Amino acid sequence: MTKYKLEYIWLDGYVPTPSLRGKTQIKEFAEFPTLEQLPLWGFDGSSTNQAEGHSSDCVLKPVAVYPDPARTNGVLVMCEVMMPDGVTPHVSNKRATILDDEGAWFGFEQEYFFYKDGRPLGFPESGYPAPQGPYYTGVGYKNVGDVARKIVEEHLDLCLAAGINHEGINAEVAKGQWEFQIFGKGSKKAADQMWMARYLLLRLTEQYGIDIEFHCKPLGDTDWNGSGMHCNFSTTYMREVGGKAYFEALMAQFDKNLMDHIAVYGPDNDKRLTGKHETAPWNKFSYGVADRGASIRVPHSFVKNDYKGYLEDRRPNSQGDPYQIASQVLKTISQVPTDAKVSAAA
Ligand code: ADP
Ligand code: MN
Ligand code: MN
Ligand code: MN
Image 1 (spheres, rainbow, N blue to C red):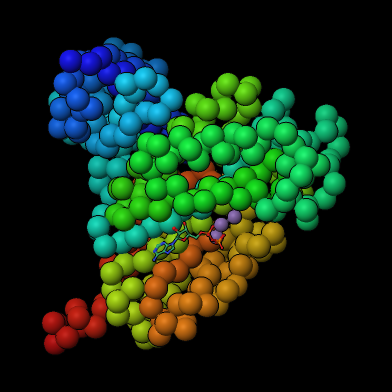
Image 2: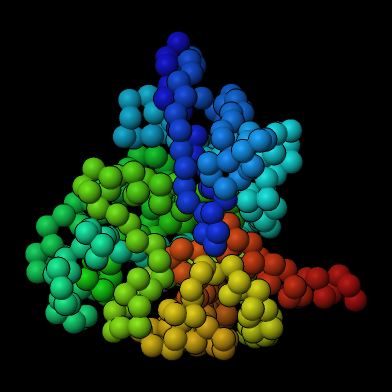
């Protein structure tokens, strides 16, 4: 038997965006534990905005498991928060009720700022560094400093070793701003991995005395870019059948559901989706081929391939909850009849 360090990780009850929480228990297993072998556990919900002090127990239900590369015999356990009965989802537990579909693929592009001493990493104590331009995909000390890339590389290796589908990295438009991409099949699989990747980044940067700022517009109404979490998505139907008529019906439904999308695309998004800095205004839906100023960007390949493939919703922001974002995308898609459904009904 081996003693494993099980890190149970969950989302707390803070609004408008939950924070990650985690605590460790040691348990013996003959080999690396499967999800089914991991027991329910509890925590004090009165300290996480999830219960009142007089009845404070909440239950942690393991839902995904990954090796923890930073610890000897470490296990990362993604959990849902349940009521004391262990079966009723807590109101803060969005994952329990979202739409899912193994055939729906999601690629999330997480942008964020490194922060130190209350300002973006690399910003002078007062004033601003040289304006945006050289930082995006930049190289060299004056563009990216001396520590950001080291962290980003370590984070990449941690994700890959944990079996998370990390797909890439780039330095972003603002100084101190970076991006990584996570891809997953199914909304829960993709979103679990995004939350776990965020957890690994936050835990890693503790060692550097650096914070991650996930707010979508940390520098306010300035000429510094905000942070998004573009949601690239495709369903089996979009990849295999598609077509211009279906695409146009889909875009009409996205237009109709504008407010439902904005509601779950992250807080303060009106400050980011202004129409400037490669964004579309938050209150007007638009789409365009290769258009980074549209709500939804249609890749060239999509049009060339008879309107088959994936689309990029550029509106979700860096603080958004990937569970709710993916679910809303699936909800809107589900409201658009496919040829198959139409002919079945006829
Ligand atoms: P850009 O910065 O040009 O918008 P990225 O390369 O950062 O693009 O991100 C593209 C994302 O699209 C990646 O996360 C990738 O996994 C995702 N993606 C690629 N193909 C598909 C697909 N068929 N369905 C869903 N997502 C996809
Ligand atoms: Mn990108
Ligand atoms: Mn980007
Ligand atoms: Mn993008």
